[in-house]
Amino acid sequence: MSKLDKEDRKEIPAKQYAFPKQRKEPLEDAKHVRNAIARFNQVEDVTDKERDEAWKHILAAAKKFKVDVEEKDWREIGAGKKGKH
Image: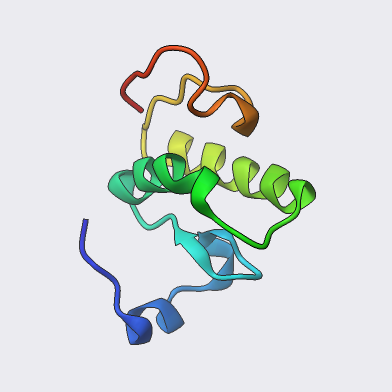
């Protein structure tokens, strides 16, 4: 996964972020999708409704980039056994 600087982030359309309004957690490729899942609970200043929408974005990106996601809901992240995403 390449590290995105501030200028790179400006170039990414808002719809390619898990949290488009906040421009948090880009979903550019499989590595970014896995990273977005791993960091999901660390995102601050978002509502549960925004998390619900972000999870939909992540699941769509996961399907696109063929990333297996065990959790069906973001509330399951970190619950139970840890597995590969």
